[in-house]
Length: 542
Ligand code: NAD
Figure 1 (cartoon, protein in one colour):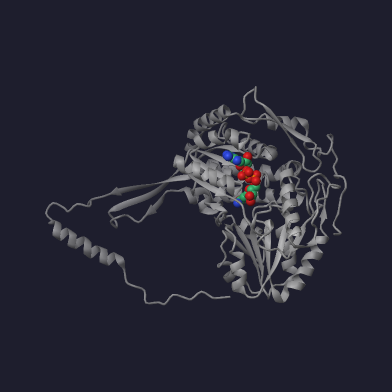
Figure 2: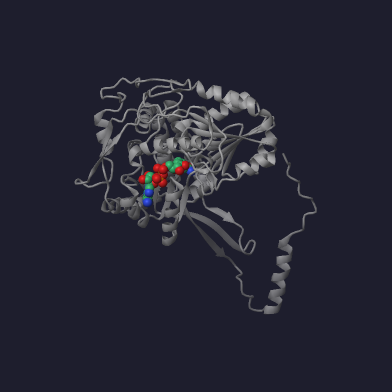
């Protein structure tokens, strides 16, 4: 492996290993935003790049969560009474503040998560796109809609959308800004208050985002942040919620779904994946190899939609593998608070253990390492080289378990049916990618894949960035969707108001029930309309 890296972080800092913008005063101010009593226990987070202490945070107890909900519930009533136009003004100001202060956000995300600046910048872009979208489109999504009435002209039917109330948002550490803010933005725009529990490791970024939303004009109390382990405050977060928005592992998602079922509240679950990329025999090899690098190693592979399984047509396998391996070996890994690095650090020791275990298990059972395959303690405690495996078989953990690290297995296939079968063989169904010179052919294969998003000639960003369209998982990858109409309407209770005018559903005074039945039967026949004689178009097969 010839990957190069920086042995020491390239930082200019008043504190060891931290960039200048992360002053002790800032970190203290953000920590003070946590909903926790004065006697709260404290937790210290560390920087993945070097293992040095980063933040000293209060830990919320269940009683603090109850209080956060009480404050949020009070604030929600008047927030729900504001116009969508007023909420839009707040959200657009937040959008502008995030873009203007992005350097501080990038420093925070890198310090908390260990990702590269480029990967962190993608989160800034995501929040810009999502906040602009919901600011502009919320009025369309939420406005009362006229619906077809029971009796044409006589029934005036309207669908209204009411906020759920107080939404719990639980978010993971891998995309500290995106995962903390994206789902909250939509919940707030729909008139809800939010009580959020980010992962403790990346709580500062979530607090920074909340701070900016208040600066943008969000009324006091509408967004609350609590910190703690699921085992301690998970119960209070569930028991007080009017809706549960969870992003994290499938194992925790199942628990959340079952608890939400017990309480009969809605839940949206964005869970794990084992995402497949298919390189068709007519794909442009250089583009597909670039796409594989971009798809497999963002945030050191700690991205829910990143690629962990690569299926390549036999006829182009050797050319593709050569191009992919060369590009991967040329990646620069290291720690730097600038745009120069390609691959950053893993975030937690447990992630490093999982990645190491998956690769060691595969190698012990006969897999071949084409690139990477080892940790890099010389760069920092949690670095691991971007790794390509072949010869992976079903008895290896990496075959079907989510690694959530910079590890991809390459397989070849004989025909498109086999590629589709292999790609669909996972119980997960989050994201997939198809590469072909023929866009229509790529889209036809995409439609056969069991995945909530499929990108053609892109790994994940095209679908992720299409915020007007739903994004989420099938199968073990989750329930519900973020983005688009689904991403905001899930935070609302639909209500149908039907106003019956002039004539109701019982026969008028001088009409017999028989005549009334005949009249209604005739009306139903008219309303059915004619049967179409046009033959449906057959979908194109790849
Ligand atoms: P995790 O389930 O362990 O933790 C996620 C969050 O849930 C954290 O804030 C954690 O503190 C909290 N939590 C854990 N147990 C809880 C409980 N009993 N009650 C309430 N909260 C609880 O997940 P993780 O391993 O930290 O995150 C990585 C996983 O998240 C991967 O599987 C990844 O694919 C998935 N993920 C999915 C998406 C998506 O959009 N589909 C996005 C990012 C990450």
